[in-house]
Amino acid sequence: MTKVKICGLKRKEDIDYINKYLPEYIGLVFAKSRREVSMDYAKELRQALSTDVKVVGVFVNEDIARVARIVADLNLDCIQLHGDESPQYLNEIKKTINSKTEIWKAIRVRDEESINIMGLYKEIDAFVLDTYIEGTYGGIGKVFDWNLAYRAKEYGRIVLAGGLNTENVHKAIKLLSPSVVDTSSSVETEGLKDGEKIKDFINKVRSITEN
Image 1 (cartoon, helix red, strand yellow):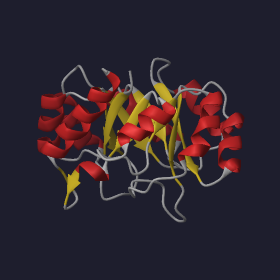
Image 2: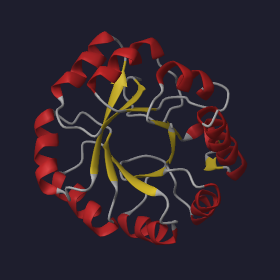
Image 3: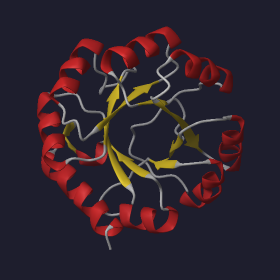
Image 4: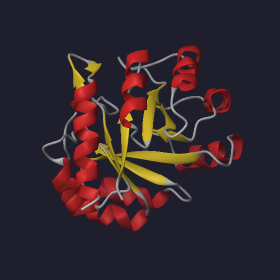
């Protein structure tokens, strides 16, 4: 069954929505972004969150020591490395953080070479496929060519991101059967998480995977 990740939560109200509709994952962003949260505030959000929901910390080219500190303080279930982190960086961070914390590596998909790069990363728990846009590291709500994602599955578990919404997620799941579908901007209204949109997205995914 394809699971759901709602990314970029930053308010107590967002956690209320999550506790009501219970996606499998949420994402807290610790990189420079309009969705960035501080470690202290993230801890408050974490404490208010249902224990049925796993927490993914999103980082971009972050200092390994800071990542390890946040993983430990927030007891993160996963880290999502969404920048230009090298295979060597991932090897080092694997030695540094709790071994129970999954490591997800984001790949910004532009062409076949984007997919080939995945072969350089070993022992990754999942790859997050997002859309390549020059000068950004995700969260822009644009879809990439899903035909490229077929080969990506050769390299491991796939988290599909990049412009997913209630209109196209059915096609995405039927084509690619990703382990997780990841959305942020499509469940927002005027830049803030919208409870009805979160509910509709989750219900749409579950209606597909349960049939």
